[in-house]
Length: 268
Image (tube, rainbow, N blue to C red):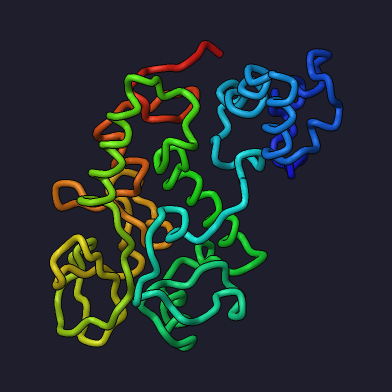
C-alpha cells in the first residue's frame, strides 16, 4: 500500500488528485492494482507518469517510495539461484529477523554475527533495520537489472544484448557470500586489519578461498554500503552491489532506472 505520510510534499499526490485520473481510489492502491487498472484502461503513460517518474521532480530516492515495494522474496529466489548447502537451516522469522546470513547453522552464531553489524542495519522485524534491508534490496538489486520481464523500455534490437549481459554477469560476476569461521589468522580484504583464527568472517566464492572480510567490511566499493544479504558482483578484484556493477558496464536511464543503453527514455 502507499505510505501516505512518507512523502507528504511529493508531487505524486497532486498527480493522483488530477482530473485525468479516472479512479480516486488509485491513491490508496498497491502497485499491482495500479498496473492492472492502467492496463485495463490502456493508460500506461498515466501509470508511467504517476508511478515511475514522479520522484524525478521531488528528488526523493526511488527506492524509498512505498509504491515501489512489491512483495519481496528471498534474494536467492530473486536472482533465480538454486538452493545452496550454505543456506541456514534456521527460520529467520522464528528468531525475529527477516534474513539470516548463509553459512551459519545455529541461532547462537547468528546472534554473534548480528552483534558485529551496526544496530540500525540489523534486519530485526519491526525495526529500522528491517526497513533498511527493504530499501537496499530495491536499490542494490533492481528487478529491471535481473530479468527482461521487469523492463519496459528495452528496445527489440537491444534485447539480445540485454540477455547476453545478464547471462555473462550471472556466470562470472554475481554471487552470494556466506559466513564461516576464519581458519587461520589473516587480514580483512576490506579494512586490512587482522582477522583472528576462529573469528567470524564473510567469504565470497568468486574470490580465492583465503580472501575474507569482517562482516562489517563486506561493502560495495562504489556506495560503501553493506551488501544486502551478502549479494555481490566482482569486477577487477573488487566487490560491488549489482546496481553499481551494472553501471560500470552500461549506462542507466535517469527516468526509468533501466540499464538499457540509452541516456533517457522519456521527457518528464
